Length: 222
Length: 187
Image (cartoon, rainbow over all chains, first blue to last red; front, side, top):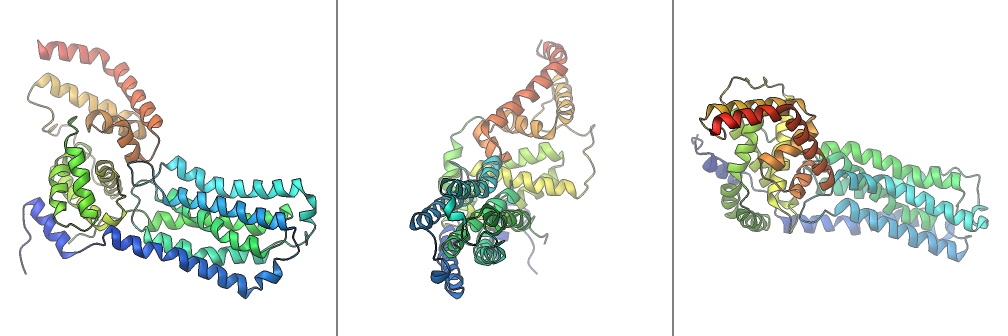
């Protein structure tokens, strides 16, 4: 067995040469694969549950408004969760918390505004609670959330649970785009349970997983 | 510590290293290790433990180099990693530092200043941890407000407020002692 160097710098260099790490470029390529894979999974779910036929019955303006508003909020939420502050490798805790909690709040407020602006949109199946919507959102968000948590594993030494919560919220909002295209129901109770609650659940799940996956661990002693 | 000339060099070296130039890590080490060592020594009062934590910090930087964002500053990133490892280390119930132990290389042989340094550290221990950390990073480690905000994961305004409150608390508790000690020590 070879002896460990006693000089701290030499010891460190020996340690890093024995355990190569991924470079930024290699990581970027694998992270970008998550986006198309997530879209394919969402599209597969949409068509598996007869999406085009199921989504009919709404006024065209409401259909377009839902798609545009959810896409815009999801894009901002993803930018918030994956982006960073200037000259830093992460955002502040308060920004991440604002993105995590603000996403479901803004989405519910938008849908509530549409319902108030044109009460006719709430007349389609207002009795439906929204179990399918809840399940579809969770199913479509699961892969992107797990994929992004894995891609960003051990990346946040400051507030991994807040980053995880923001990622969960963003993945829920992104999955919600497909569910909005699929579901014609706009009654506030249905929206709250079927469309917003899964985002809140994903936010909580992201926070729990984030603390475990995104946080740094001390390297094992040799 | 206030000389910022080394920071762009450290940032550039870390950029090269994150992009795959393994040799650049030696430069990152050379520029950051003394600062991390001093930061961790002040928090542990144990040279061997501080050295161990510096080693672990660089190992984590190596393992996480893919997460170093282009254009980011390496010092707050390194300090944030070191701080996290230190917190984990504290949780493993290490014995508290001996108050009579050597105060370290930053306090020279002048007895009055040495005593004052110890009193400041004692008083610093009494202020809330978040406030103490902000004050220490800015006033002792020489980080800018923005860099300290990155390390602590809060806003610049929060760092300013915390550091100011710590400063006020120290001034209130030690103002007279400082005047007496420095008056005697510098005479």
